Length: 148
Image (cartoon, rainbow, N blue to C red; front, side, top):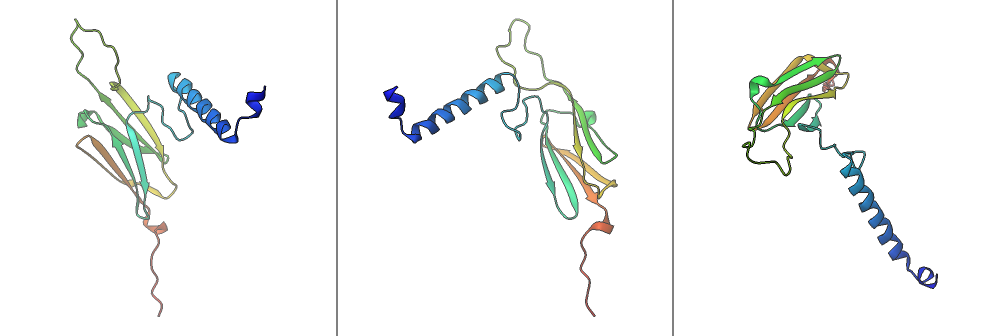
């Protein structure tokens, strides 16, 4: 009892930090994200989404995919990226200890802003990165008005 009364507040923070690490480790072991912003390990491909006044740009990091298997569609302001990645199987005489690379079909759906123009979509796949650019409608883009 005396030992707990003599503990400094700094040690309480160490206890909370230890508890947070244990909780993160247990949630990660269950395949759940450890924070609201963390992507689960099953999210493939990893995405970066950027927005400019002219367009929305999506970068999907998907190495080892044949570009012919990629499918990019826009419907009702939803951008869908789908495809398939096949990995060479290990020799039959070896058993896998761990497999961290994703193989198989994938599908990611991204909600686009209301001013996205589905008629102006460009998609390029190079060096394992799929870049999709969805232009914004010109009517809603900012424009400079000259004063006379």
